[in-house]
Image 1 (cartoon, rainbow over the protein chains, first blue to last red):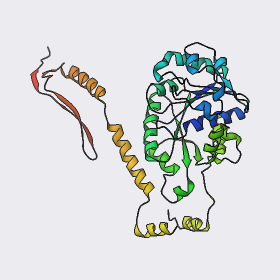
Image 2 (image 1 turned 135 degrees about the vertical axis):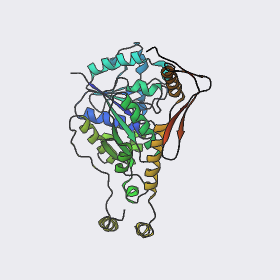
Image 3 (image 1 turned 90 degrees about the horizontal axis):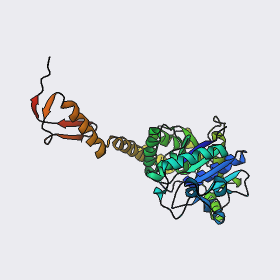
Image 4 (image 1 turned 60 degrees about the vertical axis):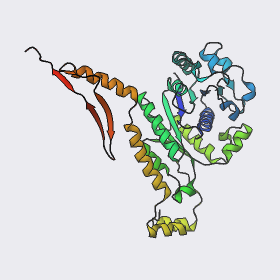
Amino acid sequence: MEGKIIVITSGKGGVGKTTATSSIGAALALEGKRVAIVDMDIGLRNLDVVMGLENRIVFNIVDVVNERCKISQAAIRDRRIENLFLIPASQSDNKDVLTTAGVERTCKQLRKEFDYIIMDSPAGIEKGFENSIVGANEAIVVCTPDVSAVRDADRVIGLLYSRSLTPKLVVNRIEPQRVERGEMLSHEDVMEVLSIDLMGLVPMDEQVLISSNTGKPLVLQNDSKAGQAFKRIARRLNGEADLPIEVPAHKTSVWSKISQTFKLK
Amino acid sequence: MLKDLIRKFTGQKNTKDTAKKRLQFSLIYDKLEVNDTTLTDLQEDIVAVISKYFEIDKDALELKVKRDDDTSALVFNTPILHVKRKPA
């Protein structure tokens, strides 16, 4: 059976696309699937360093697309998680170096060799974005609960629809206390504004920065709330579509219980 | 929590409600924006159709999107030079 290509995108930069890509990919591999994570941010690669594989790069995705090497030569095997591979971006080329036809051909090959291919799209909606969605079977849009991320997500959702992809939403960096205080959009607000279905909710988590400092997979940190949320997203992608979506919450104080009872919000 | 109470009784709004409302408006406006190529293409198509029936002054015509607070209209304005008679 052919593998599935899932593109992770957002429009706006800095909302957690790379974290989402590496975590969802790692979690799918932990589920026993053969996974390739592909960094499509040509010229500004980051997945390698976030995943702690920066010292092992030989070939990259541009070499694969331009047929200078085989997929197996460019795919770096993660030593901590079995069946997890990274195909890094090129750091020296610019975004226009890839042709649509070349990317399409590579996507076909990737689908033969892996169960899941997770594409990390660059920020923006230019050629790099187009290249990252050209072979996609599914799309996930990541956004944070702020006006600029939501607006950019809307634009990207529109573009995905026009390519016959029906994206699902991951709301990242939710701070339950601030949502409760009414100073942060809730996931319901974001879903309503974007009229889109949810794939998962990820709380703000200090562990994300810590794990990227050391290049260790977030999903291996059992005390990481974000890591656990990404694991559940991976299970939903991998056949458990009905797995309930947990809403991030903080320990409720007496006061907040009382105010909830009286619907003060 | 005390702030919530004060807000509740003074009718003050949460900032996230303001954010939501602003987003909803801006997304509607974003979608009404038409880019120049679309407008030029549309103009060429309209001229082609109208030219089947009328002879129009192509240099004097104008096509624009007019926006009011809650409506958006496409305005096409052209002088007619002749009506083309079709053979019966």
